[in-house]
Image (cartoon, rainbow over all chains, first blue to last red; front, side, top):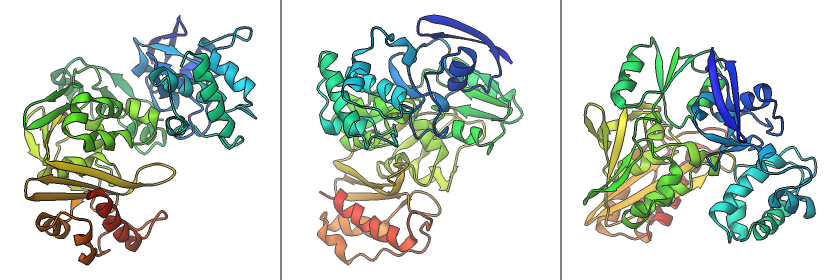
Length: 155
Length: 261
């Protein structure tokens, strides 16, 4: 056990947890931010994607301790219910989700993808979302959403 | 995951002290294999020594070679202007590993030290006559990989960097497993003047290997057609739920043909 202090969405979260605590568990159980989901728990589905210093990572495949000293952004940190992030807005407008379970990870991956490649083609988007699995949509509207989101973000 | 202790030293010498202070410690690089292994309780180290703070992530052009720090993330190698210019095939290989999030965390040193029989990097190390530099010595690629998940590394040895010899020409083509994107078969072909090296990953029961017959055929005639007469035997190849040994034998030839352009 030891104290782990993480900066999540601009707020410092200090908790006494075991060194073996996964980042996603720290975010959900200790910080109480349940927008980051656990889907497969085997690094494949991407429902747990968060940003660490602007870089997308799977929070189920990292220890909380490894993220010390970094700025973590979760889905709760990018917009509010009244003022959605442009990427969230694009998912809403383009029916980019059905059950919504994969959506937090999709949105976080999409934001990083677009921030690195403002003019992402359909192929770039599909390649960039390889690490995110959706069981409902068939991806078509997700790709459409990311394209629209990229435009809203100034692509 | 079993309980364990986390340590993050600031240099390789501190990392060695840390690992020696533990009964059974493990070095933690990107963690893309080690963390899932721990989560499945397939390993139970009493401590993890995170080497991400040891300043091992530089990429430099050293004339005849490109030297890449062991903690270089796959994304850094894929996007490196130095690598893209000198050995574009290596950047292409890094770009094709796993998915975006795996590439953001996974490292060259971690992949090579783990020597997964289906990992991409070992094929580049072997084909590009790389030297693996550790805290105590340099190991030639031909002596480094000793079997499936086995390497010449000692328990308390850290890979610090790997020097890849710049080829005249090189290419990497893999047939990815559609789910994991690990190589069902991946072939790295590198040409150094008249010499050709062909390294095959994803297929051998003993891990990555060089295919001498294809090397000699390609050395005298560097063309995909020249490979038609080569018979790839399936003895010693992996047979699993993804592909039989015979299917992998066929893929070896096909991927090599595609790599020879």
